[in-house]
Image (cartoon, rainbow, N blue to C red):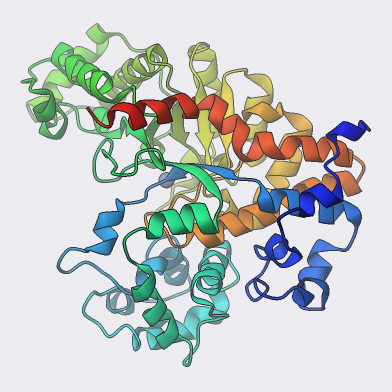
Length: 482
Ligand SMILES: [Zn+2]
């Protein structure tokens, strides 16, 4: 064990109280030093070994690069549009809403619960029958930790609901993104995949860095949404190439990556298809003629690789959704199971491309580890995974570390539209990272020194290297979105 690689206990604790160090563990512990040592559960979970204290402290104070969010611009939260949902239930509107639907909340209650017009305090009565069944899932925990850290509320109940609503209103004001992401979460920067446009010209571009979405390039050939800004009239596939070229020409220098969640629609088994092979399907599509499933696939495969080639020419990694689907009552698991094999095939077909497979391909994370182990151009991103299944995410990280190169794993992305629950998600991630490393040390697979050496790379340094973050930040800071 090299001594210089060991961060001494004294230095890890420097500038950090024990309460601060353990605050991410459990709602209710943020303000109590004693709490981290009493029987509230934290002590049992963390243990009192030097190994755990050393690792947990270092992880608590290490910044995270957040490689995946869908955050809307802050101004849209501060000044919501007429009819936009703007009460405490907004924090539950993504992910947790699916859990509660899966638990049995019917559509009528769902609509009322997330209505902009229904009394925010009375909404609790709709959720109440389900709450105890969903509050311990990753989605539930993320929200609860957020309520604790942000609003100082331990749990949802008849009494606390008014305080939650009141605190929600008080928090949502100019500057709250920076307060939450930087001051509370210690996040270096986020990577936003806009769901309303291909890319957002953010007002805070160094904090909310951007992916360039290629989804509509593939899904909506000929669409005016893309061709109009480019000023190109699309008559054939070459014109569509020009439209794609325009988007890359305009935004590649600002973007950190390209992103596609096309895996919600089909498998990611894209084959190399020539322009000639795809031309017929393209013309049929833009003239609204019926295309066969085979023609559709040819066209999508062609456009996918066209965009991926553009990305690699611009030194942009390719982020692909893999694994589990957000939402409820529609997932085709028989298709999701194919993702790891298709991911391996992509790496083979594009050896000069950097593929980032998102969400650990949950639940097929063991399979996706083999892809990162085998292919030098495969990277795995744990974004979203800590709240899909926190225990599986920890298991993934332990297995990844002892199986595949640690410079190709990314450990955090909140995957939220709303900024507030990033707090809970980041807390669960820090806890999971700490536990994964501690358990590997305790089981004798790695030393404490090895574990300490991994923390900076997996939490922020890998992301900075893979996405060229510091250089990209300089570009947006220098010229804005010129
Ligand atoms: Zn996402």
